[in-house]
Length: 408
Image 1 (tube, rainbow, N blue to C red):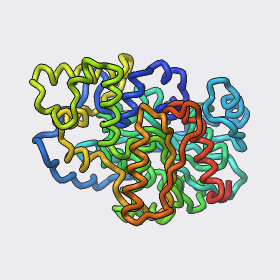
Image 2: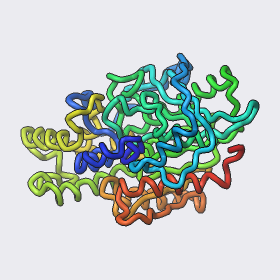
Image 3: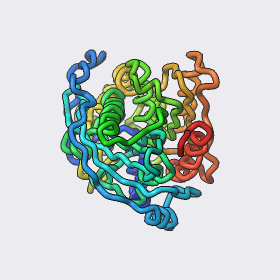
Image 4: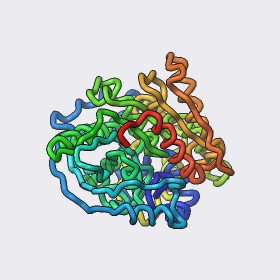
């Protein structure tokens, strides 16, 4: 769905209506489709995060998926439901599925997967690398490496000349069955950073040449994961950081507290009876039976009945416990100083991920001395809602990369 998560099935996303708005909003899956993991033990301060598995980023396998002719990509873009407007493909694309090692929400080693889309250029030609993080999805079939078709965003972007890396995330693809760590910064970042490492190993083996440039982008949950990965690259002194040129995240809940405050306001408007119970700072005082009912209603509202992947529930449990410290330590990705340009994009009428999340991110980063490295551009769609701003985001993102990206 190229909407709340920029994936091809835009029509399906629109039908999720209220559910999709809330789900993508916490743009970090809070719950499970009929299941999930138990909340982390203890109350207050979270435990120190476990060290990353020693084999994180190790390439496990690579498989050719298909060749996608440029004509097929052009036809997909011309389709009525296409959300990638004004894009003219230049190259056919070869799609590969890469499996690699990363970590889950508890720091345990897990085998994950992702899609690598390579533009078919003349022999010896080089390409910049674009890591594209998809938005919220609810079915495993929508994961990039399970959906390597002409309309998949990663494939479309590769047809413009980028080598595009699209991690499936933990919980999808090869790691289906492991709870998806929605809005948990460390495992979200790990799935992307470790995929960068595995894909670099594969490019060396397959003699797929890159030009030393790396870009990160994503919308909705993808925007959040993009920001988490950028911070992890910088804090960890990753060698990938030397190649990073620009980061363009759209409509992500980087500031989780601001996002949740906006969600509570939305709940009050849409569900008055439920909203009356949701008073930030006082949720922990709800009686056990009442809190369980609130949780049940939230889960029912957040996850569609046909979801076939499992979401980690600890985020919503911490929220209902008023555990703001946990959210700050484990979910927020907005208050730090980047070292390369970060170009945020958001719609003022976004009721899925509140505009305040982007505003507070820019303010926090500039307060730390980021200056002009960080900017926020408003979506001009009418209305400037979450889904309506997907097509202009793609246009904006490509426009930001164009003056910097070489060898397209």
